[in-house]
Image 1 (cartoon, rainbow, N blue to C red):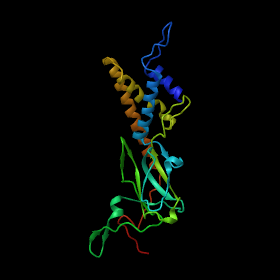
Image 2: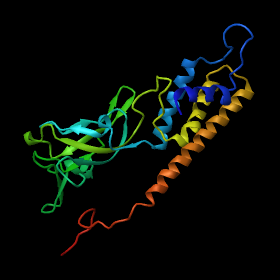
Image 3: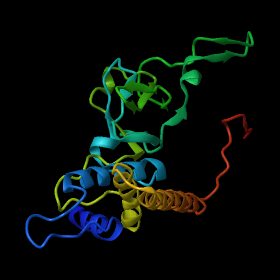
Image 4: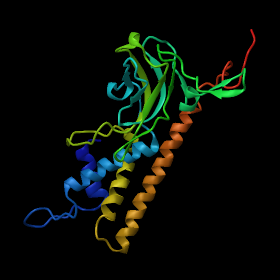
Length: 249
């Protein structure tokens, strides 16, 4: 659905805000600007809570350009999670690690933790995403690579698979939400709740607002369930030689 269609649906069918005077301008409680604001908020909130925007192709959100001597990189502000990373010169993904794993190492000779976990400069082999950075009111994902890229890595790319927010607000009347079309109408339930909550309403209207909020929460749960069910079709594979497993050949 396009933004203009979402606006009509919200105003006419959810809010019943479509009365007009015999003369003069339309008699509406909410302006188009206010409802568009609520629709955009609903769009972002649905994507954040349902984790339904999964992306591996949008350059802005899925590519990191390496810089020699730089270990930490900010992901796009739209990125919520990084599910995998792969160097452009590799056919396999980088190993996911943590800050603690990269900066500590259990020395078997002394049975003590030494500060020697990270490798020397070169092509990144591991990545960690627990280097969170607070930027104003936003939480921006940071990616820590190991080893630190050296001069041979200048301009090289790391390709990400991510779960993200919409890249921007819908401003054109012909703009369409990025979340799957099956959830466009359910997304509007949040916008309806926001509109009614922000209006000086009586108890009856407040009850209607809460019903819209409840349906929005139900839709989030349904979408998350669908995402989880898709994972059930992924093959389960044994992995030896890591995470405590060893093998002898």
